[in-house]
Image (cartoon, rainbow, N blue to C red):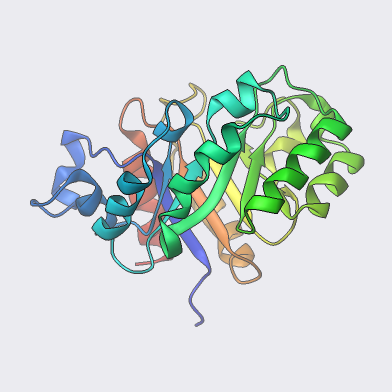
Amino acid sequence: MARLALRIGCAGWSIPAAYRARFPVTGSHLSRYAAVFDAVELDSSFYRLHRAATYARWARTVPPGFQFAVKVPRTITHGDRLRPSPRLEEFLPGPLALEDRLGPLLLQLPPSLGLEPETVRAFCAGLRDRFRGTVVCEPRHPSWFTPAAERLLAAFEIARVAADPPAPVAEAGEPGGWPGIAYYRLHGSPERYRSAYSEAFLARFAEGLRREARARPVWVIFNNTASGAAIANACWLRERLVA
């Protein structure tokens, strides 16, 4: 059977004490995490800029084939609200220092940010002038879930994230935009960022992933990290589909 084009990981590489036995006992948290998973979503980049040297060190810490999804800073998505600013130029040298360890850039938009086509088109054009890699976007305003919004994202080869729980509309639970990649962010349900997913839920999800990852690259990131559930859920899914 062909290997699935599937990456499974967590938002951050923290290893809760309850799950340390699943990982090597020596090394940094990142190196130990990367011995089990092949992907991570870097959340700290949302809150502060990291030096290019820091990204390069992280790249040297992980094995070949491992990749980082890097969250675009909130100063760009929430502060500037995708309007022109020099912040993109300040941010990009860091992720680019990851070289072949760089996966998607993630644009997580605030719930209050509706689709303003001209602003979004200008931002996406500026981003694509500077970065040709994979980009995914998690909008959280109803205006982004329309055929026109799908076409706009697809025109710039930007995939729309599939989020669980889906918000603000049911369509948010399915991938959209550019079809070249599917990127799932599982935030935990019913309590966001904390609740663990049941094995029944994960088993149903796994069957869909098995089919989808034969057709295109798929990323699955568990963001229910507040209680440590992300590690347990990601391990279960990985063992089901990859190990």
